[in-house]
Length: 417
Image 1: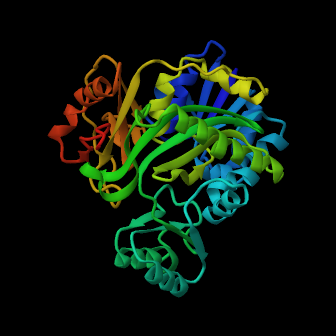
Image 2 (image 1 turned 90 degrees about the horizontal axis):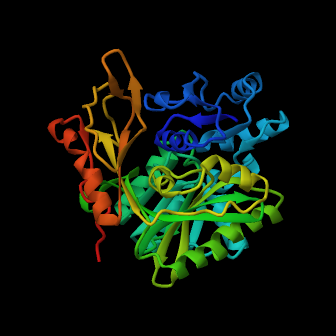
């Protein structure tokens, strides 16, 4: 098979590294790809949002299957366009991708279909939103309704932070209009985790639970990011919790979308909080999570291409998992998630057994590999348990201790009791 992967980040690099292991693959293309993806696939200079260009490329290059990484093309209707052109694509149509594309839609959908989630209100007027916050108090969660590259959620510990977030999203339009409408939610206390599933219509096949560390700095301090590190599986997420999450959240979402005439094919991601009163949804994503994908896929025993083909054909892929753990630590540009420099030469990583490197914000130049984004790399470690996986990952991070251009968290995978 000739396969096209749309995207340019660490998630796509990880997906491609697992696709290339398949005996079913003839050639892999990435649009537009990055410095690390170049080592595994043929990168083509087509932007993720150039949907007509991607359709044309798929036709001209006899692409048998397209897999989409990022959320923006999904919500712009890339799956609709490919299907209309008679091309096979593993991605939800825009009518289903709205589950991620609009926080307000997602909340209404969850209430309608009996999916447990936090209480909320939606606002289009900043003054009304502020009055609501002052009535409710803090902590409270402010979310941009639209897509904001994972940065449109502010967990406000104080009323002042919440009011500032409302101004940032609604008045200053920090995320290009994604926050003209906002959702304000009750703060959920508990232990966060995520569960990603392969989905085709009513069929749901969950992967392993993962736990992402979103705050920029150690001890969960600093601003929210797209994810500074992650591990899988999650020891405190029991089989009972996983079964509840699959049945009462992922399956209900898939069935609800079918019921509404929005059939879902692709990857459904549930960001979850395990509270004292049970599991509740923080958010849905309609694609592979980043960085969760980078630690879940290395534990998958199956051929990823065969899994996707089976799921699309309505067959059970019989997912099998290694009895191991995986920890991934993000190396980020100094200043991330705010302003940071690009074009900084990366130090050479050592080859450490049971580790891997996923490139996210990188670019290949004549001088060597340079930074080209906020989250630059993910260094992963695999081991018989969480502690040995952590040890392997951090062993390969020492080269970044001698540079002040990058930083990473030192406590990924350390679980507080």
